[in-house]
Length: 316
Image (cartoon, rainbow, N blue to C red; front, side):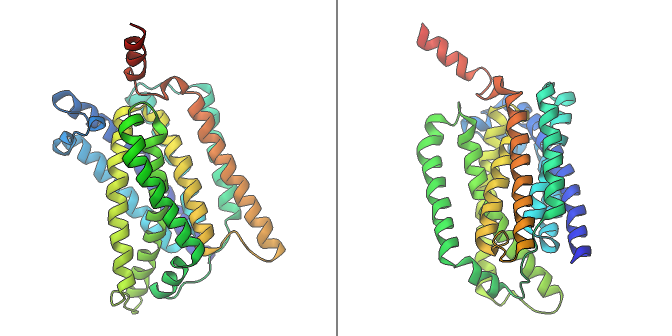
């Protein structure tokens, strides 16, 4: 179990480096594409013809593949919080490449993310052993997780259909909220696909189960939705703000989903409860780091120029 968690830990760190870099590359690609056509924030897809955006996309795919494999070998509550490293990578690169200055509070936020991630790594609860896709399917159709899934779908539809057209351009929480809640289902489905691949390689074919294909369809649908709204967020708001808020929301919902599905934070014995409590404290520390870093860039909470231009129009 220790060697498996260590491998997952290393892969998660590699994933964070690539994903953190991809934010910057994609942002530069979106800026370049926006010069010659409709911006992604306005519903344009001109960035699909921009090579720089595709380089960022490939970088993200490499990071996500590493992340995907990490979920095969380690618990979601260990892998996901390590994404805090991507905040630091994106913050440092944004400072030098996008000229988004990293304030002292931003540095403090990054340090809190590191401390929180370390606490989680040291106290990450162990998941129960899963031996087939059918077994994880039984966990997915528990009443509690079905209720969570229904809530995620409902919240996402409300954000997409009502809030996005009205407030998406001025409030970062709309786009990031969609990415975060849907992302939690993505992680749980990826965990199922990862287990299916691992067992199939070991000689236990999981492709014959219809549940495997349902999880695959959920992954594809959720990832496409996430990418669309993440591009809109990156094109509209400051990268130094998008990264920590997205990470904090994504991590919180993923840990919640993992706790409901795998019950990893509901250990019955005293030692398990202490480990779970420490992991929760680490998560709070990481979330707090994201908030502090976001506070250091509070002037960019709203889209650059758009909010103040609207205010001037109303004043006139």
